Each structure stands twice: as structure tokens, then as C-alpha cells.
Length: 341
Figure (tube, rainbow, N blue to C red):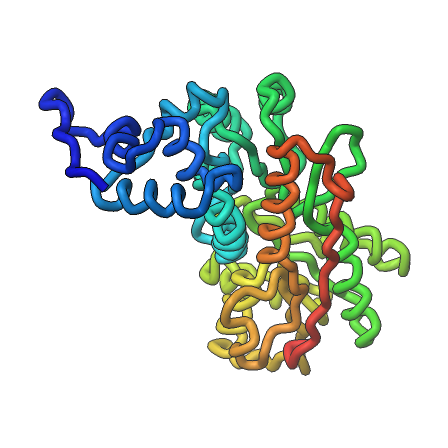
């Protein structure tokens, strides 16, 4: 291997040509080797990687995007980072994407359709190779942007049968109905539904609870407790204090997310309300710490890591121009019964 070439004084940036000169190969060979293409002989690939490491070469994603029409990253739109559910999902996506040579560009929508649309416009300017979008309730403008971009897209956490749609997730309504049936099977009849944030997936859970309660002749709008504030332990504690005073009294509370239910269990301890003897408490998502509460929290376990993995694999297939085995993957859910019910 020759001596490292001198870099231009204007920028000092190491170029693809610098790596090619040091490795004694053509720039196109360098490009192919660094993308991991199998057509490059192993000994040449090793020489290129050694030269790139010696020079401290970092590929220019903008140049790569211009050359290939798409970049070396995928755009991921999620509602928030403060919920462990989406952190687990993102980690799974990255574990699949990085070995395939793609980075993740994260956009946080804060459950705001207008913010989601603006983020998507901005990210499409960077020519992503693919899109991962949470949920199915995009605005008409956002749906038009996705359709008009020509960029492969997979929807996360919910499933759709719409023609041309690709999705990986679960039925939020069916999961909520299953948890409600568990509470009914335990003999509870006045089952309150307590929700914060009020995003589309929360509202689908409420519909699942409503349908199951109505099927048993127990539907009652007075059992619906809705708070538009962000979901948190503090909000869950406050909602519990309000619901426990309701007359006639409730005998179970289905919280739409585990952080609310965890806050309710802490409030019950503080107020001396026995769980589940006086009131049963259940949550949704099986977040960290739910199995350590007193009593441990009954909840619905959602497969968010598997959603991230399967969605990333589906997107990789679409980006290669391949048709996935199925455009819709329903990963289901599990009702995890613990001491709180």
C-alpha cells in the first residue's frame, strides 16, 4: 500500500479518490467495497477498508444520495421518545438496519398530524431509502407525500388490509377486548376505562373495551375517563383518585398505558386502597417496572421489539425491490395476568 495522499487545503476532507489512490484500486471499486457488495474480491475489499481506516475516511451521504437517487438512511417517524415502547422499537430497527448499511433518521411527531407532515417533508428532502411510520392515521397531505415520494414505506404498531399498504403490528382493539374479557371473567362488572394522550391507538383500545362491555350489556359512558394530558405516573395517580370516588363505585380500572396504571397503584398504596380486593387495576404495553409493582400489574404485552425487527426486514426487502412474503404481519399480543387483578 502506498503512502497516504496529501489532502486539498480547501477542505481537508478525505475523498473517495484518496482512498482509491492509497489502496491502488479504482474509485468505483472503493464505493462497491464500502457498500459490502459481493462482486468485490475479499482481498480487494480488505485493502480498501484498511486504506479507509488509515485515512479516516467517512462516506459523504449527500453525494451517495445524489449518485443513487436515494440515501443510505431510513426515516423513522415516532410519536415520542419518553415512552419506553418506542425506544424498544427503535433499538430493534437499528439492530437490523446497521448491518445492512443503513442509518436511522428519527423524527418525533408528538402525536401532532401537522408536525408529522412537516417532518416528513423535511426528511424526504434528504432522499431516504425507506420510511417507517407509526400508525395508520396520517393526514391526507402526509399520505399524499408518502405515495408521491416513491419511497418504500412500512407502518408500525398497527395492521392494515388496505391495497398497497405494508404494516407490522397488532390489533389494538382486539388486545383491549381480550383484557376486558379477563376482567369480566374475574367477576368485575363496573370496569372503568382510563386514558390519557388520546392518540389514535388509545382510542382504538377504548373501542375494544366499549365493544366488549356492550356485548355483556354493561356499556356505560360514565365509566369513560379521558384526559388529554401526556400519559405519566402523575396523571395516572390523579385519575385514580378521581375514579375511586365515583358513585356507584367501580370494581376495576383498565388504564390505557402502563405508566398510568403504575401511578394508580402508587396512589392506591398512598391512600390505603386494597388492590385487587377493593378495585382491580390493569394496564397496557407491559412497560419496564410493571412486574415489580405492589401488587404486580396485570397488563397486555405488546411485541414492540419484534415489530421493529419485522418492519425493518420488510422495509429492507422493499428497498431491494422484492415483494415481502406478506404485506401485513399481525404479531398479536399476550394478556399477562399478575396480582393487580
